[in-house]
Image 1 (cartoon, rainbow, N blue to C red):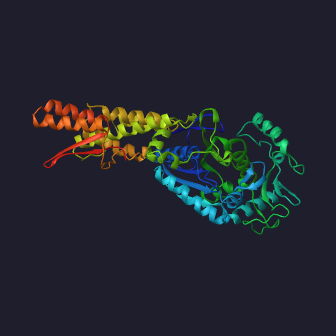
Image 2 (tube, one colour; image 1 turned 90 degrees about the vertical axis):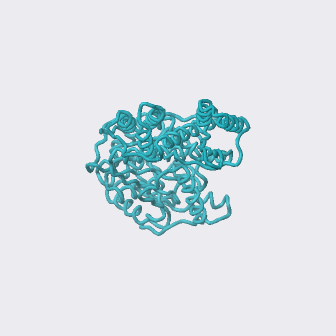
Image 3 (cartoon, one colour; image 1 turned 60 degrees about the vertical axis):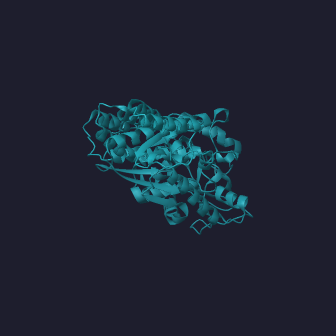
Length: 470
């Protein structure tokens, strides 16, 4: 099946044509580990996980590489201000190395809780200093860089005629105007960016390395180019990230990578829109006020309710956050799990091989192949599970396969010690109906309970129940 993806570079959905038949190399920008990832960050990782899972479901062999930024990301994208890792260390009274370790582990705890499949390669920037220096030397040899005394080595964007092609020329001109506000007068062009930085005079950095230009640290953009090319080649298939990376970070990755190799850096660019919070707009750690996955689970929600919430909106649309929307998503996931478990029960817990030729299966694949349309794929899953004209065993088999993409733990249940009074009353009413041999009413009450996420099992020792919500 053809796979189409919206390519930011071309501003349109395009047929995916891999560098190597049947395979896809995907690079995804990872976290800067100076603080907890917020739920807006995690929306991007859920979307990228959806891309990888969808492509694998459709038969592609995928290699995913993701960086961990543990050095070099300054507070300002204009290569000014404090390194975020140093900022985190100062905030918490720890070493920058300890901060990186702690928040990397915290990130992957959330990543795993959302059932995101771990990348095939994870690259901490501090493990690739040599590769970044080598890339800088190549750029220097080709005449793309110039030094600024006491500051660092910079990429001369004027040397690349198509600089800014990802964001668009008008956008780049706007960036230039903005850059003049805090312009480094020694730069040749306002949008020139650091390849290598020196510590500011009088500053004692925790993270710095020897280089041909002097002791310092790499510019933020360097890590992604060096890592992507090391693990996926000079040209990669798909590069992913949040939409905020388009005008600066990804624009500069393209410039330095293509300047060094003379080849296209990435054939496709996938960008995830922001999660926004009403009047506050985009969620940001720099504001000091942000919600983490712990904020969600602290209110009693399954972390996969947040994953489900993300999957309900296409990655190219803004996702507006509210607690009411999360509650609705949690109820929706409860209902979907109850339905899946009911189908499993009807199938007797056994499933044949999924019928990939069935219309519902083809519809599910078609949604995935159309720019990873997970909301449409979820709609197919719902409709199929509810369709009594399809044998329960086939619906169960399909749901098991769909789990490879949705990763919602559809068949997870847990025992619970207490039940809402109105639900407990329905169970008591059903038990009375069974004692009176009113099987019709008993079945109706079983269905009513199932629709509310309560699964009933009649045993010789009496009625047992479970909640579909994990």
